[in-house]
Image (cartoon, rainbow, N blue to C red; front, side, top):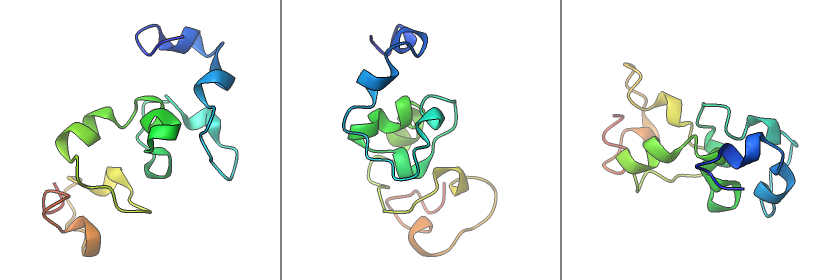
Amino acid sequence: NTKACDWDGGDCLEVKLEGCDEPDNRHFLLGDGYCNGFMNTPECNFDGGDCDSFNELYPNCTFVGLEPSLIGNGVCNRGRYNSLECGWDG
């Protein structure tokens, strides 16, 4: 039951999610290859590892409600995205 072993192919999903407080019960999104900002927390294992690359690039871009896919997408998003922490929107 490790990240390197892909959490045993999902067999250990309940163990992996312990403490992941996702209100809409969308745990199937963990580890799906897409960084979901609302699951980018230590408790959710940074969206099952999906947000690892994002967190390496922008370690201080941790605003609540942030959608990581909007950073560096070719569109200048204002507000919190256009900040030093978020690389001036990538």
